[in-house]
Image (tube, one colour):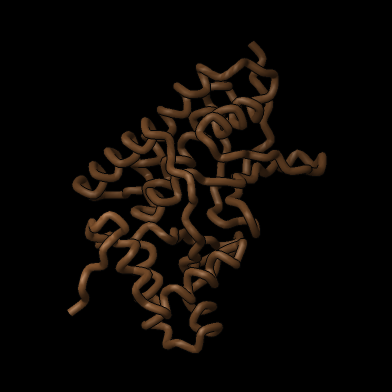
Length: 233
């Protein structure tokens, strides 16, 4: 039986993170994931460590539940159901008000069932409209999206695009809510997708598809936006 360790003041240290790091294999896996900017799949970790795939998945799930890793599906634009990719959780916590809101949403969705991602996206869309209403007005709806995402702590960056009218990309360089994403990736990514949609629709942008691709770039999640023009009043 494992004996709980004592802290410097004599208090018992028995948190999920300490227990997760009680295995040399999990410590090695955590280091491997932290060194991979674009995240790694369980198969990639298994190949690098020589562990059996099922053992690797168990270790990754333990690290994710402890809040040390976060997982999301990244298709890279390819069809089919992609594998989970794992990244290190953010060091900084989300703003307290947002964490409270998101935690309440996760709790509600876990009890209500149904299409979690679609429901979260609808909630996010309504919230995105409210956030956009408080953002400085601009001539380009994308500027409103950037202001909303920046206010939430995503460090968004507009990417250079060609003038082919096909749309554009925004890279999210940070996600201060990775720990919450790790609890329910579909709900949280759906919520953030809805925020973008709501911000665009508040600014009268065309009702066109918006895509949020987790880990869509080596060091960022990617938001793919349609060509946006403000409707003339």
